[in-house]
Image 1: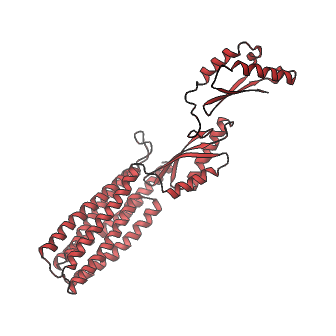
Image 2 (image 1 turned 90 degrees about the vertical axis):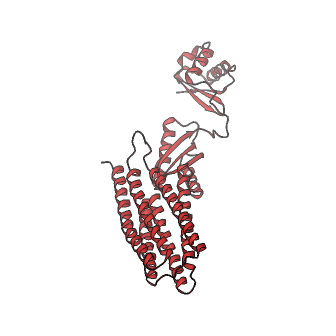
Image 3 (image 1 turned 135 degrees about the horizontal axis):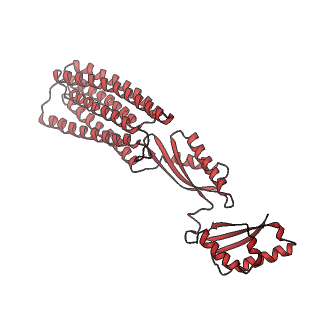
Length: 382
């Protein structure tokens, strides 16, 4: 098994373990809150119990998403399956919105109907137990969500926090009703359900933004940009594009290097850019670097110019009248700012004087004057 497979398997095991702990607590609390809420006449506590049952559904979604999302890349999914986690987080957000809206409707109906009963004191203790246990679950789940950089665990952690906050509201509502404000319990149910819907909207919104390739945080993008321009050999950079895929960040960028560099040196610089970014930013797993000899956003395009084979045919036709042309060892072409710069490599042994070199250079330059896409022609000897 590869190291990547081991990492994915460990990630799945941790996510599953954390989620099962939460599911057990949610099951106990849901049963307890609904039973005591029914016996103790607290509609807010019953609503909170239904919320806890919705957590069981979210826990199941988390386990399923972790199993599917942490599979290794395959032929059909070359970038991996990380966005399955994101898709399930969006579904979880939708579930929370639906639960919240449903409870709001029911609670408002109770308020308007006047069917209000003062809760029993036992309901306060269950609400207090819910607050404490859900806050502990929130901190426990968020710890591993940050460690794994998992969007689905983070969503579930905030789901636990929403339960803790909602239980506080329930606690206040029950206490208020027992203190002589009978409508406070039902009002607490409305507030809790609206909080549930709001958290669901935030989770769904963040997940959908990731699914449509929203870029990374602007401050982080700025930090990445600065880092790239500090790498030796990179003169400028542009067209930096980023996106999130589950716990991983992917980016592609155009970097400018000296136009006179060899292809291999330019490639070496691109390797260094990729290596430094993945090393210094742990969540960045893939970097696609495009090498540019100039700023292709600002300079004229060279896409209309002939490729090497076609261009050499035209050049050799023009050079046919020059006797020394048959001694050419190599031709280097530089496509820059909508023109072609030509460098001709010839053996040094053909020269007898500097005057001969100047004469030969003039002959070659004159031979390409009819080619308006040739910006310059230079003779080099070795």
